[in-house]
Image (cartoon, rainbow, N blue to C red; front, top):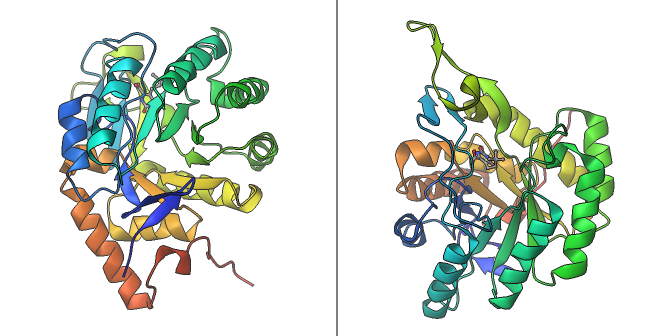
Length: 312
Ligand SMILES: CC(C)(C)CCc1c(C(=O)O)[nH]c(=O)[nH]c1=O
């Protein structure tokens, strides 16, 4: 029974990996994920300059998931590029993802030029949940801007590249986004980023639990699995099959991985549950998925990928 997969013709011996932002901020964390059962890793979204991010507490765990307003703390794209290139020299048969985000399209293009100049051979994940110009919604919710960014990106970057998308909640938005995404040679799309601007309250103290943004933050974990599955499947139904889908959101056991693949995911990423359990989770998720596949008579993920059935 194999849980192997491929994205943009790059093969991975396991379809389970970390989500950007979790266990991927420095070489210590990335090395641990690299040596875990995960098929590969994606780095924290790198920006042009290193960033401290928001004041703590900026992450909080609840029984059903998590809330965060990290503020994009990262070592800067150059740091992640240097580290991944060095690792790539040692492990030629393994491929890695580098995530990046600019605060406008000019920055996005500068980041991609750095990646081109470094002769990076892995896969780029462009985080579209980044802020836009003040007064406008985050990039992923500004469809004209998404179109403009992708047009510029694919005029300037030749390597395999995917985008990390925020969750959508309206069928017309799935249609509108799919129409834009289908215009571009994307290697994949990654659905979903955290559900933005949620609020978690400590009843005893009658106060919020994270400091930035008066307690507002991105929601992850059990709270978001139905939304994540719907986004994976909605785009699976609408996108050119050449554009693969990475499923992220609410994965904490083998059943959740199975469901994301059944909805159309070729790869899955784990965030909140990885934060709670640590990198040993990858071995557990892989075994649980294999047990489910065995019970159902599937030998590889292609046997059931996207095969979600509807009621007649
Ligand atoms: C929310 C942004 C800071 C604009 C981007 C980075 C990011 C963060 C973060 O660094 O706060 N948290 C998430 O759950 N998803 C993200 O994409």
